[in-house]
Structure formats: C-alpha cells, structure tokens
Image 1 (cartoon, each protein chain N blue to C red):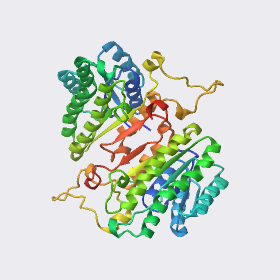
Image 2: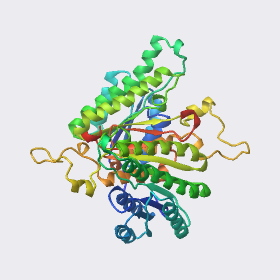
Image 3: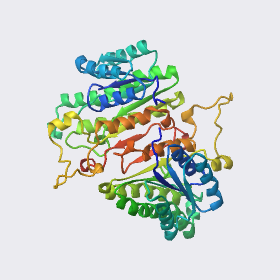
Length: 252
Length: 252
C-alpha cells in the first residue's frame, strides 16, 4: 500500500536538491505533488518526472518572499486538487558572508527568504488545513539553526527562527489535527554542493569509501525522513525538530 | 513490505507497554525478535504472539541492572540467531518520590535501572555490532529527560543521561556503521498508566473525542517511530533525539 496514496503535497524549492528529492519520493509513495520555485523552466522538468511516475503535478513559479505569490501558490493547488494535505516549506538558501560584512540589505534578504518565506507558507497552508481539520506541515530548517554557523550568521538565525516557528504553530494548531514539524539537515550532498567542490574526500587514503556515517547525507536521506513525517505513522509527532546529519564532522 | 525482513532484534522491557509494542511491530515488519525482562512468564506470552506472526522469538529473563545477565542476554541472542542487528534498550521505570524524600538506596536503584542498564545494554550490543561492522541501537529515554520532572528527579536525571550516552556512543561508533539514536516518549497511554487512572479524560464535555494531538500517544505510536529508526531509511541518522509526545499538555 502506498504510504501517501492520493495525498496532495506542495513543496517550495521543489526544482532541485532536497526539495526535488522530496517531491519525487512523495510521488513514488502515491502522492500528487505541486512544486514551486522561482524559475518555471526548472520546475517543468521535475513536474514531468512526477508525471512519468504516474502521478499528477503542477509547477507554479513562486517567490516565497512575496505574500501574494505564496497565497496564489496554495490557492492554485487547492483549486486544482480540492485539498492540501502536506506542505513542505523547503525553499531557502544561505549566503556565506562574515558577520561584519553583512549589509542590512543582505540581512533582510536572507531573513525574508529563509524565515518569512516559511512563515508565509505555513500561514497560507494553515488556513486551508484548519478548514479541512487536518494537515501536515514540514519545515526544512538546518543544523545551522541548531549548532550555529558563524560564516552565515543571518541564515543560521533565520533557521533557528524556523525551528521556533514550528514549535509555536504546532501548539496553536494541535487542536485542528495539524502536525507541524521541522527537519534540520546537516550538510547535504546536493548537486550544487558537489559542484562547489568544497567537500572533503569521501575516501580513505587507500581508496576505500569512508564509513557511511562519516559521509554527509544525500538528498534521498532527507526525503525518506520527510516521507516518515508525512505519513500516518507519525500522526502523534508534532512541534518537534528532527535532525539528519550522519556523523559528518562539520555538523557536530 | 517487510522493512526488517530477517533482521534480529533484541528488546529489553519487552513484555509490556512500549517494549511489547515495539517487539510486535518489528515482528510484523519481518524481524526475529528476542524479548527480555525480569519475569519469564510475562515474556513467554509475548514470544508466543511473535511466533504466531510467523517469526522466531526467544524470551530471556534478564535484570538489566546486572552486567552478567545483560551479557548473557546478548550472548544467547547471538548464539541462537548468529547476529544482533537492532538493540532496543527500553527497560526502565520511574518512582514518583519528592526530592527530599529520595533515599540514597532509591536514587541508586533508579539510576542503575534507567541509566546504567542502558549503558550495559549498549556496550554488550556494541561489542557484537563492531565485529559485524553494522548495527542499530535505539535507546528509549523520556520527555522527563528533556524538560524535566520534579516529581521523579532521579528518573529524569537518568533519562537525560541516556540522551547524552546516546550522542557519545554515536560519535564513538559511527566509524563502525553503528547508528545509535534515542526516542523520548512523552506520557504514553500504556495499560499500566491507564490502570493508574491518572490520565485526564480523552473526551470533550459533549462526549466527543478530544483532537488526536491533544491526547497522549499510545505505545504503537512509539513503536512506529522505533520501526523508522530500525529500518534502512534512517541509515544516515545517528546520535539524535526523537521526541514523540503529541501535544499533550503535561509534556510541554
């Protein structure tokens, strides 16, 4: 039996990396998946992959910093599918800038994208889910919001805010059968990160692969955790932070 | 799909409550399950239920406070099944005593059962898993070790210790492909708790059931999380604390 059979999921930042992996994992589990990010052309490719899996998909170009666009994204989802079961607020990115060099403009941008964008997504989805008397919201935070990240202080602060937002909304909406949880991935082997070439070798000196737990997670690992949180097996978990980071040294 | 097909699991405190639910959930997922607790007659019943599900089971009377008994429990498991894949250190119990009334004897007993017992189980299982170059250890802590419990300060301190023990062993054994995580259940509606009659009503004044998230979890909810942690989908999660407590007011 498909864990998410017939469920409707909406994933921001769904065109690449962790968001794309969650979208495809949910589709494989039987969900119809709406994906949103800024560039339509990137989204369309992922929507095609979802349809190839036999599920329905919408691709909605959205800037999560803009309230009207977030409202529109949720509205289109509900108009098309009649409901919204699972909201994944995943869109977000950091900028590596030393503390004294962060301009006010950059600070505001990073906070708006990574914290306010999540707030807007939660509220838009929450209104629908309160009407439905059920729903699941999963916010993608980061270990930067748990252990800190001095080289991306604004991002780290925003992610800590996402964790607290999660706890508070879980409290407010428990009576409406809405689960709100967050996942904090550690450093994750996305295509972008691999391209940056910043990772240490995943091999020992003799060429053998490092133990699994000493290598960073891949997007699929985060997606599997997101699947657990979206399924009914986690119906009694809410307001919690679930960290996934292997034992990769950078995140401890 | 049997996510634990042919895995060998050992669960302390496996004759009732959360431990029994984990044992049966693992058996339903395809595992062979060894259950341990102090009273053989209670264990034999659970072992019979596991066999009725078509899986193999051993019932080993064990006091987890006694090192030789813990080692014997692990030895018997490995002698019978050839391996130990999943160790669940679940045996434990609190005693509701006000701080000034806790005798040193009672303090030592609660620490020995709830913290030292987990340490002994981890080390006995860890030795086997290091040889195997793989394994998963799941320690059952408690929300008492997260937010505190002034009415059971020894139990609370022991459970906080379990959480830290988990993090440390995860760090030590990551290179051996051993995942070590802990689950902190909030107050759980076990048969014992229900018999105590201490739970508030699960109904509204008009007789309707309270929303799911405002009612405490049941053992099966904890077991489903334990299943997630035992399966390969959580292979990159280690050293983490996962809390399951609904939004039941006593645990927030």
